[in-house]
Length: 219
Image (tube, rainbow, N blue to C red; front, top):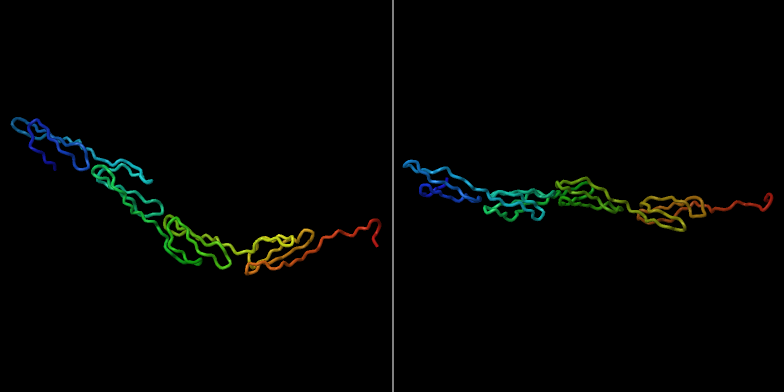
């Protein structure tokens, strides 16, 4: 408890408030007959606070002196930010205990997925004769999302040859298109396993005008 000094009758003694508080505690020395006694203590102590402040995107609330304040880390991280309000009402430096969540490495039918930070994509290559990749997201909880198949089969590029337009065509397949202008029929062309066009195979007939005699039947 508090220790009150020897004090003359009808005088008031003052003590400083405890650490972390402002103000005083006062008590008056009274007399009744020949008996001196202390009156009740009057406590005018107020707790010191660290003021609310925003720093580096973090909002630190008003905090009582000699207490810690803890803020959550952003999404995708574990841990917290911690700060202490000193007895004089100033915040200490921020202690950052946040750690980025990471999806653990794993293997599946698409290949090997490396350890990947939360919020980031990982990728593995496509099979032979495909381009693009398999991708999957490590979400903000540090867990793998479903695989996204962004692989596309290699194709022979679109090409115009001898008046015929051949669209892009996957390897090991063929495309059939109309003959060139002035012909009827179709042309078929294959894209080889080595992703090269082979020679077209045409079933085209030249368009002709019918025989017409100038007058009367033709002999």
